[in-house]
Structure formats: structure tokens, C-alpha cells
Length: 101
Image (cartoon, rainbow, N blue to C red; front, side, top):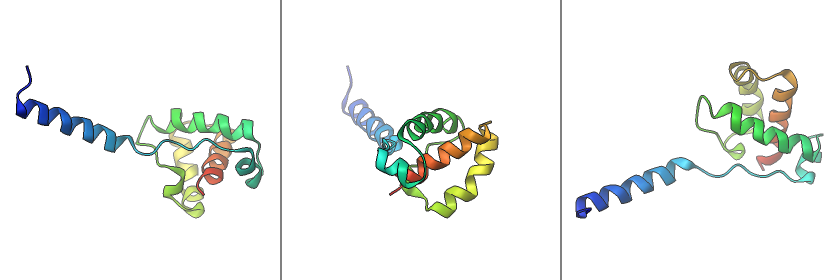
């Protein structure tokens, strides 16, 4: 049976986990994809690539957390670390730029 301290600790743990979860990754729209010169299927697949490949090393940044210049600056190094192909890196960049607004 949990005492008051155990219950308070459990509540604190739930709050901590929830706070660390961050915002969910946005689901792209066709209009967003077109705005960056891509298509919905490509940026939707890139969302999965981003979630899968980048979360292996760090918490995922929400696309709106950075401006376009920052995303363009960090993508080459991050893509190399995540072992993305050039096409995957280009597609992930399209995804984050499309959905950062």
C-alpha cells in the first residue's frame, strides 16, 4: 500500500515523464509539403524517419523550436551521425521546414 510519500513520489514521476515527453511531432499537410517543394507522401515518410533516426541520440526537437537557418545548419552533421542517405536528409529537412510554422 502506498503511503502519502509514495503517492506523492508517484505523482511527481508522472509529471516528470509527461513534461519530458514534449510536444507531439506535427503531421504534415499537402499544402505544407508543397510550400517546401515536396509532396505529402515524402514529408510524411520523412516524419517517421526523423522520429526513428534522430531519437536514437537525443530528444526530438519540435520543428517549430528552430528557425530555417538553424535546421539547415545542423542537418548535415545530424544526418551523418544518424547515417541518413542524402535523400533521407533532404526529406527530413523538408519535413521540419514544412511543419515548423
